[in-house]
Each structure stands twice: as C-alpha cells, then as structure tokens.
Image (cartoon, one colour):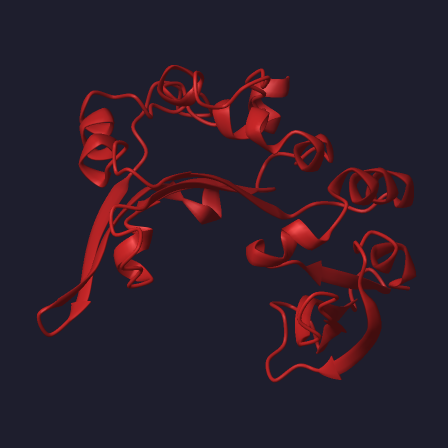
Length: 231
C-alpha cells in the first residue's frame, strides 16, 4: 500500500510504477515510482519501493527509499505522522550541511578528529571511531577528498567531502558537504528526525553545535541514544 506515501508528495501527478533495474537490499522485487514534474513536465523517479519477504517470521514488508535530491518534493511532517501511525520504522536517514565558501573544509574535519572531537558516547565510552580519507580523480582532474569518520554498520557515520569538485561544479568549486548517515543499528531512529533534521544533525557529534550553531537557526541539538545509553 503506497497511497499514504503518495499523499505526502507535493503538487505532483501522473504516478507510474516501473520495475527497477536493481533491487533494494534484501528485497526480492523493486519498483521505481515516477511522476511528472509540475514545472518541467519531465518524468522524475521520486522513490523506490521494494517487497521483502521474511520467511523465518512468515511476514512480508514494503521498503521505501527516498533519495536525498527528492526530499524537497515531500511533506516530511505529514510523512513522519503517517509513518508513526502505521508503526513503520526508519532504518536510515541522512542529514547534511552544505558549505559553499569552503570554510568548513575536509582539513578542518581532520583536525577535529585529531583532537578527539568525535569520541564515542556508546558502548566503548571515550573510544575513538575509525577514520579513513580518500582522494579521487581522473588524470590531472581532481574529484576531491572525502573524510569518513565511524562505520555505517555501527549505526552512524560522518562523511565530509568536497562536493564542488566531485560534481565538477565550476560555479561552486569550494563547496563542502558535511553529511551524517544515521542508521538503526542498536538504536531506534525517531520519526521526529523528519520534522527537525537540523536538530539531529547538530546533535550527532559533540563539536557540531559550536561549529554550526550560529548558522543553523532555531534548532536545539537532539541526540539519538543507542540501546546501551538508553538503559
């Protein structure tokens, strides 16, 4: 049943389900839902829906994946209310801040890590999450650097990357994105994160409130506790 999700799409019409070329993880079948952009008239894939069978529990589930660039087309407050009412669960939500001036660089994130700013609050209290840094490109063309802090399989990971170089955006070459991947490993992602994404971004890591607090207005940091911390 996808009608509740369709009711959250803003000003779009002529929906069509098209069999996807690849399945969502864990799903036996998947489809892309497309609709016509009311401004351009072009068909856009708004989200992907998959059918997952749990043979052990004798149940079946519908899995929805909304890509980041399509979030603006949805009424997220309505979606959060419907999701809670239906008893659905969030398994991943990404929150991000874009810096087009390059003030919050990959180097700055690396320095924060070296100072211990990303120490864990979880099971291994005070321990440092792992990090890795990747530099990509082709020939003499740089696609930028990416710093990863943490591991997605543990429930939370930070990516700081040079988005302007990655996208080869000549109008915004200094563009850097700080992106937090919130997962549901050993924790429950609250539906409130769709209503107040800035709050959960600020609360994801200790230095974020000081770094971004004066740029993100009217947001109080909100932290998602692990099962260990909630006890």
